[in-house]
Amino acid sequence: MNERTSLGTFAARPEAERFWEKVNKDDSSGCWLWTSTLNIGGYGYFKVAVVGSAPSLWLGEKPQAVYRHCYAHRWAWIDTRGPIPDGLTLDHLCRVRHCVNPNHLEPVTIDVNINRGNPRSKQLAARTHCNAGHPYDEANTYQMPDGSRRCRACQAEAARRYNAQAKKQRMQDPK
Image (tube, rainbow, N blue to C red):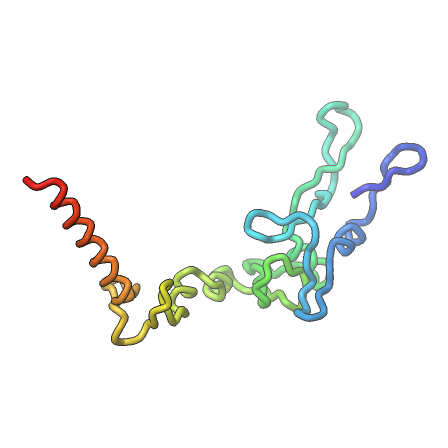
């Protein structure tokens, strides 16, 4: 963030210089990958100075810069394309959350961004086989009233195991 000078003080480096040195351009995918800090959701974030300054909390009289974190992809967009339009958010068209390539970002409404995502229900609906490898076909699939589906072969096996365990319990503990 800052470089120490020969006199021991810190000289601030331009934000753009600090930002772009943390980007790795992947030629195969076209993604510009953020190589610094990621949040728990996989999005990059970057420490930026807030416009203006606030008084130091411990000296009182000297101004001290105030910093905050912003999403790296938002900073890249603003640096290369200008402000994000009001009411819009940036959607990663490449679906790579730490990509900061402005060509892979599109300003959209939050509803569009959510619908373009890959929620768990969408992932499950795309599956062609259950966890045991049985096909989700007409003969082997039971459609639940809530719209989910169950593998008939797996359900039958679970019922067999349950009945065998219940029978074993009855044999051990007759009444």
